[in-house]
Image (tube, rainbow, N blue to C red; front, side, top):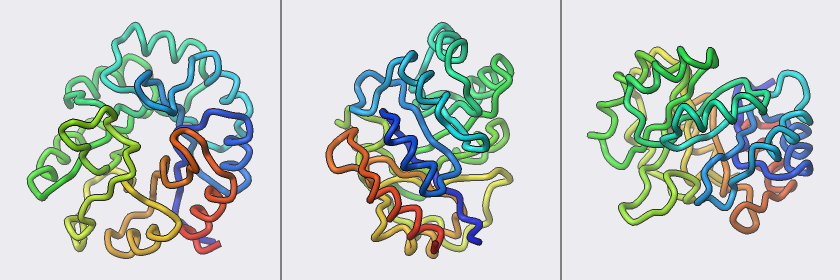
Length: 215
C-alpha cells in the first residue's frame, strides 16, 4: 500500500466528492475565493462536506480571509483543516490556528531558490505546508493556474519539521516524476484533474491518484 497522500482541491459537486473518495484521496478541498472558477458558497460546501466519508480530511481554502469570513465558514461547514493561500504572515497563521482550533496549512509560492527562505518561518507556526508554484505577477488566482515550478529546487533538501504537500501543475502524467524528484509524500491537484476550469473529471481523478500511489 502506498504511503503517498493525495489532495483533490476545488470540489464543487457530489460527483466530485464521490470520485475523490472512491479513488482513494486523503484530502478534499473547498475553495472560498470568488475569483476562482472553483469557488463554492458556504451552503454548497456544507452540503458537500456532509457527503465526505469518515476519515477523508475536509479542507477550506481561503485567501487573506478576515475573521468574519472564517467565522462564517467554520460555523456552517464541518472542516478538518484550514488552508491559507494568500499573503498571510506567520503571525496571522498562528492567530487563525489559535482562534479556530483547527490544523492550519499554509501555502507558499515558489519560483526560485530565494522563495524557500520563508518556509522555515511558516513551518514554526503551521501544521502543514503546501509548496506551490508562485503565480505570475498578473495572475488573478493565487493557485490553480496549472503551473509547475522547478522541482529540482527541492531535490535533496533537508526538509521542514512539518508535513508538507507538493502542488502546482501536477497531472497524472508527471506526478510520479515530481514525487521522485522532490521526495514529497503528499501532493495536491486541482486543474490537473479538470476538463475545463472548475469542472472535475472522475477518470482524471482516478488516473491521478493511481499514478501518485501506484495503485
